[in-house]
Length: 587
Image (cartoon, rainbow, N blue to C red; front, side, top):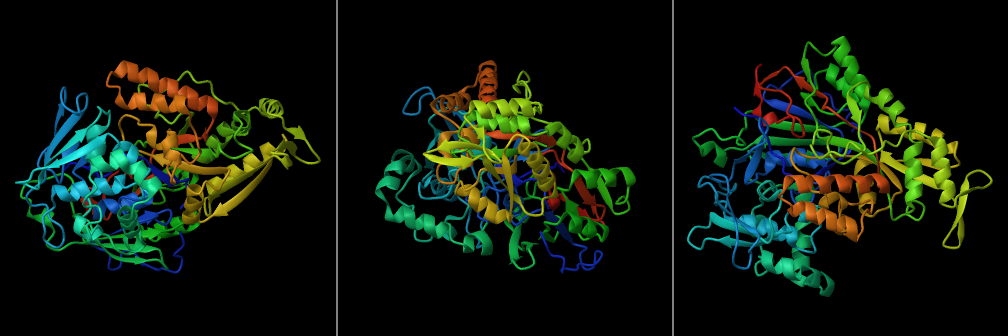
């Protein structure tokens, strides 16, 4: 059996190295748990809505509830059909309205069906993408990957046969268009409010509908985003169903479905595994409590833990009797995000000064325990277009102080001061982080001491994860500590760095970009010549390096702790680093 990643190519937000409560929930050592897998989550998932959510914890759960047209094979990162019979047939078009673009022809498996027994058809696929393109939907983080999809043709004689028509050639066309979770139209649009609005129409007139108002589209977006579809109900075609989300005790329970369509497929298909009866997700934000629960065997998989504790487990073997530790390569990085639209931080010299004032090498050695490497770019170190010529921002308070002076900041009675919009203000930076993150606290305290020496007031503000996400969406912050995680493959910078992605709670929450950087991003997305594309990748990294929208921290291997109660349980290179549907209980 091949190991599979069920994630798509969009990038997911992760909280920085922190782990949620449940100290009153006593599970006992494996008592009544033989057919269940208990999965650790470091924070509350944002939503179970597979179109609206953007955080990694939500995605982890959704991949057992929903399905995609294809999945990524972890062994070689190839695309493999799940809902589809076979891989799409892609043709570059040289004539007609989509000349210079492409068409992808696909057919859904005959066995594929929703839980009510009705077949999964291209109409469900079409609905899913129309929902994403609805300008009133909170889907700006997804739209960059699908913006070139301009028309969906459905065979009038076979509703499982369809074609995607794309206006342009796109470097991630197949991987992005076939790894979106597909939703049942009958559940999420029962009144057919999207019925007359095609993908083509929404592409052409979406902005007009948003500006002038459109009752049907707005009503559908409101219906789709209601709380019951985020935290109470999840209607997907995956092998598991949501039984309970215990908000009080932060437990989410998924049970394997009876009479699931995938059980009727005779051949072995990667992506259709469902070996365990039940998957229980437990939120635990306290680092101390995570360790206690591991010693009591209350977790079967932990994928995020402080490097200090993990190194100790590796060196001392204190978990070896019941767990195995695995460190597959990761594709994530952590960073301090700076709000470039903030009056204090909108000067590039101030952001550069803050970058010089962070003693990153010291913090890396102190906090990573040899399990991470420093980064200074959004591109993974292993990619051939990683720009290794960028000069590091080595810790230098003298340079930081000179940059602040050049930006007009002068020492006042206690801190640096400057007149902004006619008002005398102190140089004060608010640092928001998720409560319970000991690493974030240690970084903040060390940074505070450094900044105090050059006249900067640094204020630390802890937030619950969900509250922090809401504040980020409102752009209500100056500095945050976060991380991004993505799958292997080429980088599409639009989700994180295009100015279009700043609007409507998009993922460019730092407010980076201008016409020049937008044009470069757009050119990269459509450039199929590797050499030309790589040169543009390096140019874009140089712009990021100069503008300092992030203070890049480090990237490390995954730190997995996996129970020995299961066979075929091992770490994966792709996120989140495991797939418990593959595991087989050995008790």
